[in-house]
Image (cartoon, rainbow, N blue to C red):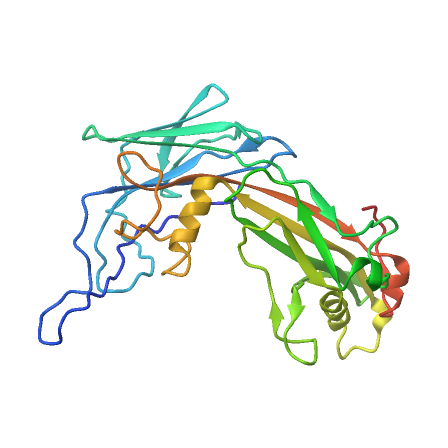
Length: 324
């Protein structure tokens, strides 16, 4: 499971006051507790997740920088934190190494499972929240990949872009698509592996620079220009005449789906100081009862897309074996 990080920081809020009035660019410090926990299930591979959460007091910054510091006095280390999923209660303990509450083992969870969290503080305050793990999205392609991927298809029938779509009945949830080219180069008799991200399109006239990459979206499909895929594949050997040393293995398409609370939270803070800052501001989404922060879940889905031999030969490469 990926590590979950927390930066609970107070926002800098500039007040529009007259030029002859004193003002402070900081808001008053709220007496609030921040609970942060983003869970990720590895369904459908294993059906598990790693329970982890962070508890913190809202604290003032030393100065106006939002960069993380080594100060841990704002962290709450003596709470009783539990999660519940599939009828099993999970006790979390504080780890000084990770500065979070966690367990020593994974817990069971599948798509659609409800999960709850509760944190009891030493002063009697209780924070709680619940969410549901997102569904596993099945991927579909704009044309059949039997025999492998190629851009040399009838554009009249299939258009100028390779579209990947997925069915979801979870409206209002965010998706994060990404596609990466995996390839190898023969160096000194050894295969050296490398990766390069594939843009949706190239914006510059040369079609080799100024790549536009996908961001978060609510739509349930994403389209990659065939020209962008071709250019990415071609550029891996730019300036190298020994094209036969290259093998294109596959494109790996990864889709990450956020649950509803995490989608709302991300959308409300995106573009501020960083992805997971918490502002003392009523416009920031929270689903924490008795405090602020976020308790959310996400899941990922990925597929390897192998190439046809004849497509690789267009560039002087070889194609790795594999079935789509």
